Length: 284
Image (tube, rainbow, N blue to C red):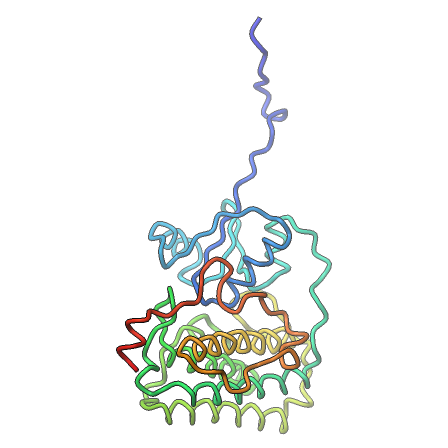
């Protein structure tokens, strides 16, 4: 007699949709998302949207063009919020690590920008337009992006400007033409951050919700995110200096990074940081 198979849908095993993660190289939140899932032994389908055209089309239909995104069937979350990522991945969530206090985060953020200035001074002007590996972003754009992260934070706390993804996807400001312009821009943001903290920041209540595009976040969480976001990109900038054959001038070390929820890798978990030798030599 043939084996009897149940046709009762209540007895059929539930089909679990695979977890897909959409990312791109050099994206700090993408890397942290992938490392978080790997650390918890969660299997996922990895979609590099810069290489996978079909995957990019899926992402655009789902959430626009922004990453990191984790998806299971029709359910999706922004991978920047670990509580949401844990839910969709089926990971028990008891809260993340304790955040550094706002005064320390503000201090770290200013230290990061000062470090960016030192590292940028080491890069020859004609090499600033070389691109990062596997990512269409120049060194000049990376430096500007770091300053724009803090600028977006300041725009929210000083003017109530909602953080949109576009703030993290800008080009270099139109008035920033030379390396010296770039350094002045970074310094202007550092000075603005310092002035805000001394004037109002030190007395700010960081418990209310921050008006950001990627999910429910307190102002404290947004400050932490902005600080480790810039710190992670500054680690990448140090890799650039090294790849150009120089020793980074006082890069961020353990003292500056301790307590920040950074990814383990400075660049990527599956890709090597390697500049194209011919392009570097041609620009030298």
